[in-house]
Length: 243
Image 1 (cartoon, rainbow, N blue to C red):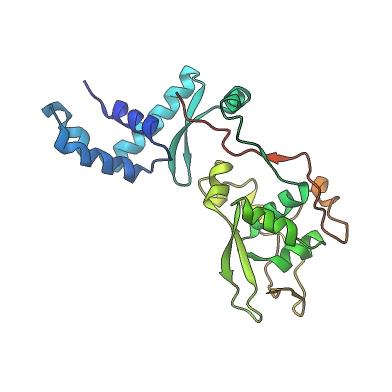
Image 2: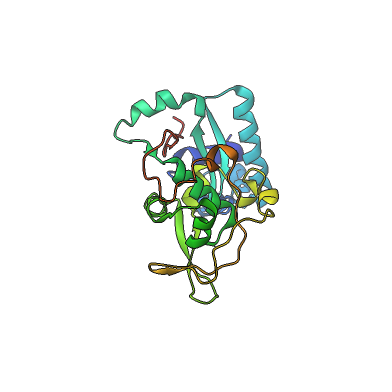
């Protein structure tokens, strides 16, 4: 007999992207016209609560069974992925996918934006003590950061924020899941001077920023940007669909 759990599992396995509960519900309703047995009719009317309950049931079941894959909830929905301890072997199936390396300065800049977004470039520079044009462009190119608009202050500087790709890569559903998010957002930090300007971006904002930890802040004392690649890396695509 076909069960709701089995149907949802099949949808998750076949999907090429994370599935939101609403998408699962739509798929169940759309399949009604193809029903062959009356006993399956109740599947097409599954409620949001039933779908959520089933998703969590599957998640716990995979964990209890010690499977090599897991069901996780991302910002855009639920998805089956391989567990991190198997990434060395899974990567061998995708030799053409090279790890995307970010330098320590780029990671510091990304952390500042993540915790205090939306934020102007000049305020990031006030915290780091260096220019960030190069690393900011790298983050934009990697799809981890995007332009969020302009600040409603004199000069209207560009504001930057993280993307859905950032959320999915780090397994976050909301920004509140960032480590110590509420505490770090309350700490007052250096701000750009009101009269300070930069090419193509007037920096005039009064948003307090993210503190950098002792290990990373020691690298931010140089008067110019450090563009050398570091050993820290972000590897995209390491979580693979389960077979």
